[in-house]
Image (cartoon, rainbow, N blue to C red; front, top):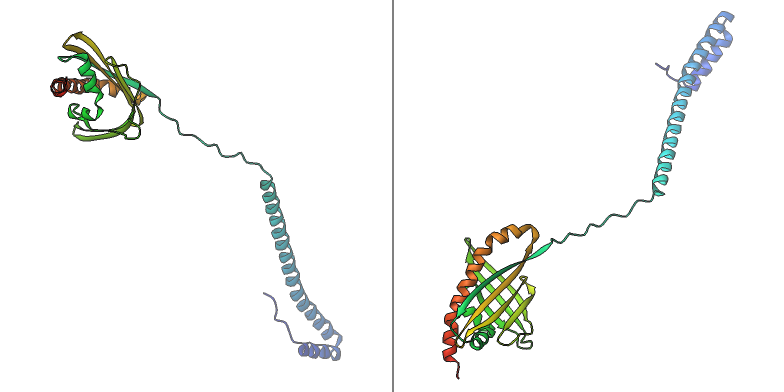
Length: 241
């Protein structure tokens, strides 16, 4: 524990007393003064060394950190890699049905060419609207309840160049991806065979599911052609000869 520091007046009194005292007393007082001096100076020197050591450590640490930060600043990092989403591989699935219809080929062709009337006989088509400014384009809507769900889809289709009394084909431009063709084969003067093919695009991973649903879709198309046969007969009767 360090001795308390005496005031200057106290030191002067001690000095005067020392001068007037005997040599033995003087020697003893000098020893006391030296002891007091050492007790005062040594802790101060130690404290100064401690402060100096701390300052040196602080400066060297910050110099090192600054050096590291400058080193990192000079490192060139690679630019981030942009990963583009991978589009699934798509595959077309075809459904084809055939049916004999008791109307001439020309009547069947004309009846099927009436696109806006298709919703009257195809069970899953709710409406077809031809664009007024572009008659080769039409907007299709599908509504059907299956597997406990209400299915609704729409698409814009373009009718390709037909072959009169032989072929009508189309392809979707936007919306549900699909394409199809209807071919007419005369069987006699008052009947013909209609072959309907509808193709739809599905991801390759879902091809097994689409294959399992193929009989269901073919059955829907067959029902459509059966209703078409009835519709075509009435259409033929209503058409002026």
